[in-house]
Length: 239
Image 1 (cartoon, helix red, strand yellow):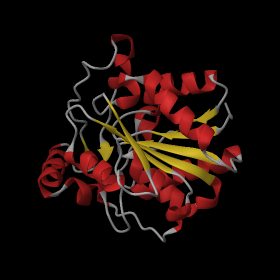
Image 2 (tube, one colour):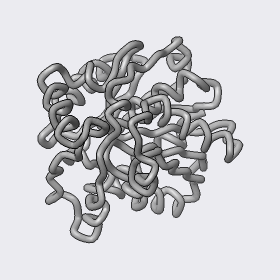
Image 3 (cartoon, one colour):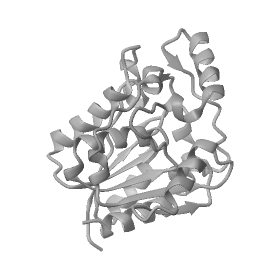
């Protein structure tokens, strides 16, 4: 196997530690793996504020890439992490060998999370944010019964998602389209419409490869070995 550098980006409400089982498997296979933390979430929840936006999280990952001196890597985003990796790919397409969207948002220029989830879900999230003081959207009650018992602690300690990360629209120059390889992995159990629609968009696009996985949305915790295999194979095949 050709060994690669891989950067894993978390989804909303959770922690970068949700990647721990997958990262351990990838490192065990010899890959170099980085898992940046996002401001205001998980282990950085003490930095939560109303000023955190999608751009903040993009810059969190930019900072990690620059600090580690990464010149060529595969970039993976789960769920909300799809917004982050798209923004990053637009800033530094020449460094990215490939993108993996793991049941993730797939925005076009000028779209926000709220644009993608539609008005009904947006109004619900804004109402929930208002009830919680207006700065963050409380975490949803995530169904964790498909996550193995020994990994369910990664589902605890979830924190509000800064509302600015859902409001801000991603601004893309088109550079992200120059990333040579893009892969979409779609969960199939209780699939949210926004992710099902993203998968349908790319499955017949020759610029993409895609596949489904028999899990719910918490893909990397429900089947970490399978997810590590998907990412590892994609990374090995990326220039």
